Image 1 (cartoon, rainbow, N blue to C red):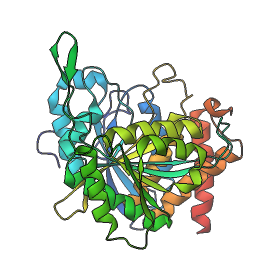
Image 2: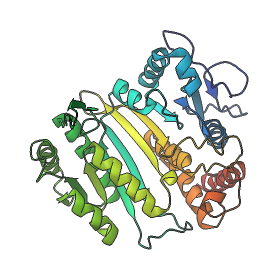
Image 3: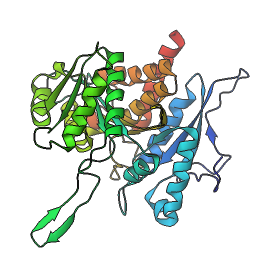
Image 4: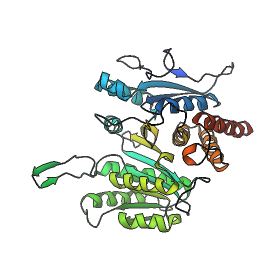
Length: 371
């Protein structure tokens, strides 16, 4: 357990009880059990947590949730101590599920990324049948970006009234880790890998990234690999999305690209994200899964939020902890419900968050029972 003090529940959560919280099933058979750090946040986070716990109750194994309160109120009250506790829990248990947090005095995502040494961020993007969009083609992308460096590493400085500068950093190790992660996904999907940046302009920094990707590509000769300039790739994804499977890129490029791709499928709020840290052997040591959307304070507490992204994040997390059948059943249940018109109001339906959750659970159970 944590050395400092027991993890605190979210202030709006159920009355305090023994930690960790568990989705124990009422039968005598010994079940598989997984410990998951649950990083609470702001706005709709409490409702999303309730939906996740409802899904967890329907799984054929046990999830133990270790709660950490990263709400804005608790961060202001406890300061860096809460991040120290979050980091300790994330490193101890290895797998975390995070809900949206408000960026006020600081960015919790940035702090967790730095403290846990996340090197790779993975954002899957795919067309969801039943959601109306302005884009008519089908997309199935996996966007893998370096989690550190690029233009995000340095906030910059003014050197005089009319001039500001910042330092841009690219490192070989996270570049290699991102490229290897991309090729492993491509192998599973039997698709290609495209390494992209502005390497003709940023010849030293982006050149190092491209060099690293080429070196990794030599270890995967059966996987198609090519390099594209980032601006050309943006146009290519829109004009010919079928030519793109897994895209790997430096930090800021992946941020821009994933938001654009989510827009093409209908909403940034439909996307999920995963962040990974690696040990000295290149194996994943810490993983954090989260929805890409924000805290939506305008609808918090009204049972209106769309849990699609957090369900997809949970599905990805289940695959990571070797519960792939359950992960696939959850993902397919979400997609099938939306395709059948069973969806929340923000994507053209009339279901509340809780009603959509129950619909997804019923579909997931049907698949798991049949399996």
